[in-house]
Image 1 (cartoon, rainbow, N blue to C red):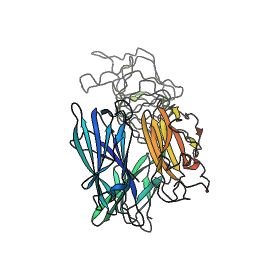
Image 2 (image 1 turned 120 degrees about the horizontal axis):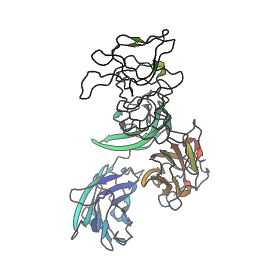
Image 3 (image 1 turned 180 degrees about the vertical axis):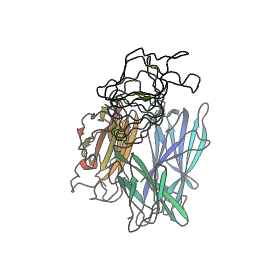
Length: 574
């Protein structure tokens, strides 16, 4: 559990976490030894000068204390070696101060935290006591933004839950589901805790029984990639403890609701397209099927209908509204030939020319046949140039509701698609088995050829013989355009257990740089026991990432292509 703590007087924020990540009180049969990590320098938007940092832990056997054995505690510091970062930091031996154990850290020269680097303060070998509650600690900084530095304290607590409260392994059964399918989410934890599932703007208090087994929940139908948050609450002796886990389910060919959308290539809509706002096309629009417009349509340019065998049907034809908002219709001018073939009729109820005794002026040819269909004009019709149709509706047969745009179309206003929008292409994948995954010194890199989604998964095959390394983890880092996405794969079980899957999803834009590598927590988890898999889902053009291979449409999941498990005789991590 990672927490950000701040105080009203301190200048530095702190990111606090423990290993194991979820801290429980010890029991005689299950002692807990923990490490407290305080990360300094994250989230800063200004420069802060620092001459000393101090971490204090409350000592004792009560609910507000960490441990009763202060002599076992040790400390360490990571980072801050470069100029401006302190030129190296010194950690001093801890010493008692009443009910507190104090650990001091000092830079060789004044350090300047500016948000571009991090310093990690560690307190090791915390033999957690047996009293659940909230363990108290304090971080004292000697800092300033200018001038002399002074001490400023930040007081905080960290949850130390009862040993019976466990909650972990929250993940989807399938990383990808079809549009309209339901996802199955799985987890492990204490059964008599209360669980609440959150997604979108909705939440559900989970109830378990014969029809709803514990540790399993089915989502409603999904149409877009969806994030889920599961919160567990456990009450003991009148105190309630909370833990929260998150996961994401991706959807194949999802529905999209966008504010702005620019398509540089062809846009094909195989279903209905509805524009509830202004639709602007700066280039040619070609409709090979029926085009139905139920609202007003203002055509300020030329209207050309020259296709062989094509028909233009208009129920009512009038001139444009006069300027200034007047409702009277001016004359409708026709300056080209009007031809009615012999199989159709043109009916005119009242035809009046111009002037006091108006005559009919047709500057082009007017050809009217005497048989076939009837054409009826109930008002003046003048066509000397362009034709503007000011008509509320132009009805087409409903079975022909289809709009096809074969040239580029730029939507400058808000565009809302209420039907499916198909933009995702074939899936591509690449897997690295154990002992082959890219590292920080040998990263996999690529440049995105188009927009898309990159799905990542890390598998941990390491295990722990004596349960002493549970929580040490391997981490998958995916950096897209300078932003890093990360997921962790901790050691969770005893020797012989299978690997667990941990996933992430990263949105990618065309031209973004992509870098992928893994890290592992010291030697308590082996690099050689980690494997990763990536799935690339391009949007728009069908373009793979470097080194990726096409994945069958029916099997896009990373899980289906995971590396083989390690040999069952492998030595467990001690």
